Image (cartoon, rainbow, N blue to C red):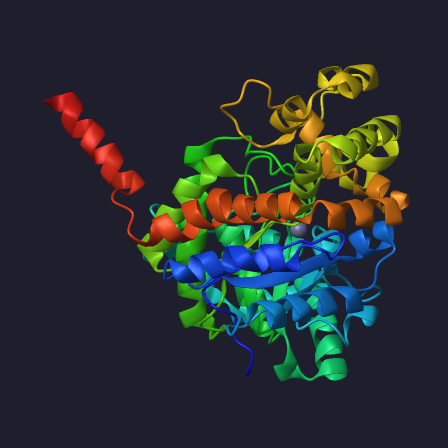
Length: 438
Ligand SMILES: [Zn+2]
């Protein structure tokens, strides 16, 4: 394997392929702080279909930005969420493949495959003490069989897709991610261990794995769920990856990938502590948060920019069902909280920006409007030239928002301030206990 993914990487979605420079600028700001965060331009087949764009454009935009900015570190182009049917057109352009096998979860593998797997992995039953996992893991043979039955077919499918890409492109020409996140139930840490053992059996050199975590990871808004439980699972997952890399000979660079990872402000401190504790890397996918900053930048520019931003919202409101349909499991919009067209048309630039920008301390911030606009990029795509020309006309306002959002609200809390966290969650708990007993 010759392509190795760096420790910290940021999935940067760029719906209209106009913000690559502004996104790269955020990674350069991290570099100035002494932290290497590598950009991975990710775009799914779903996004390409909705916008009518081609993977070649993603590659071209990335290359142009890298040249223009003099970026000397590496960068990748991610064929995001692909399967056997959709991967083809990405092959000449992508050097990172997110192999999505969520649809195969729960479909049982053949009996002899299942039997062979269980027979080959006696170490996955009984009491397992994994360094860093707080509780002992304990699988009965029946547990192992149940978990394997749930995931083996999905892993076999990942193997088929991986080998297809390797044949077409050359095994040393790309980075492999396996994603299991677009499904209903989260994967528990013991399940992750079984999945990793199976990935090793399939000889898939995965460098990132995207499980579904507990709680809601809605698009473009904060996490909804139990942060303490998330932190426990996240830490257990990190410990299990560490263990599986040694136990099964998976790539040493294997790390977690967090999908729909933008805007999860209440999780970043937990994640930062875990990464420090395990000296672990992370891939965070941020996709649509950049497109929202484009709209904010337009609205902030006032005049025709603001008018266009309002038209996009009104268009999205009129096509709400159609726009939300492909994103069912990753948005939660309360329609009663969406402002009316007439109301929004009267808003000032500041009102529009305050409502859309993800500033939880601003009383005007409205996560429902924000999620609708997140999935509403089709409206801008349909505007065609009018939208793209507005991006050009208001480039400085748009770029400033794109860079600031990625650097200040994502890279900084996760990677830059995170190089030396002062307290771990356990320390905090211990200190709270000490204070109480005093
Ligand atoms: Zn995903």
